[in-house]
Amino acid sequence: QVQLVESGGESVQAGGSLRLSCVVYGVTSGFSCMAWFRQAPGKEREGVAGMLAAGTTRYADSVKGRFTISQDNAKNTLYLQMNSLKPEDTAIYFCATTWRGDCYADTLASMAYNFWGQGTQVTVSS
Image (tube, rainbow, N blue to C red; front, side, top):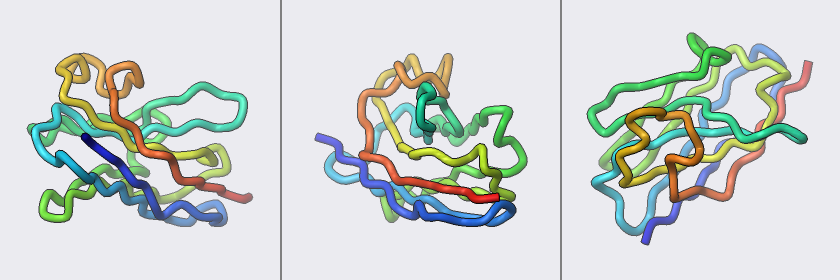
């Protein structure tokens, strides 16, 4: 079994930075991909940043140059460093992972993932 627990979300002003963390419990290795998604009120869940097992990273155009995904295998933790935050980044942020290989084709597609965390709220005020 796999459990993902996110933390680090809070309210910040535009231009600020946050680092989200996602700790993996249970089975912690062998994943094909790990990723961060977000969902704003009234909007569909969207992929923000993803990382393949080999280390390749992929980002949504809206966050390129501002967000960085990374992982610390020794701590079983996935991170999302978010800089230059904008009000439109306000959302609940979820981490996800999978052993399935279809995430290689579209790392930021939510349907490619089958393990999800409960989410952490990020609010950016102008």
